[in-house]
Image (cartoon, rainbow, N blue to C red; front, side, top):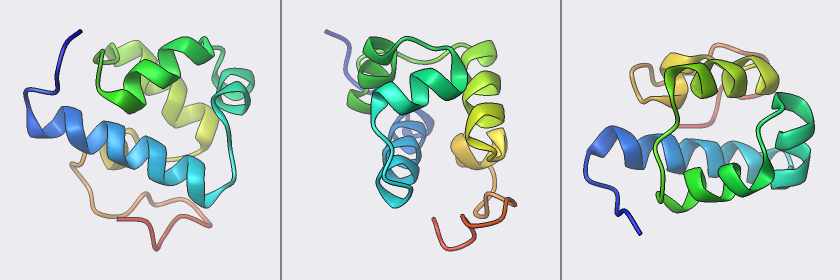
Length: 86
C-alpha cells in the first residue's frame, strides 16, 4: 500500500472527501458522475493511489469543481455551492 508522500496528494484526497461530505455524496455517486470506479475513488480518498491527470479532469468536470481547487492550487473551487470549502 502506498502512503501519501507529497502534500498535493494529501490535498487532493482531503478536498475530494470534503466535497463528498459537504454534498452528501458516496463513492457510488462519484462513480456515476465521473465514470471512475468507486474502488478507485476510495483509493484516492485513502491516499493509496494518485489520480492521473485524466482522472482529475473527469472528477473536476463530474463534480463541477476546478481541477486547480482539487489539487490545492486555488483556495476556491470557483463553482456555485462550494465557495466555503477550503
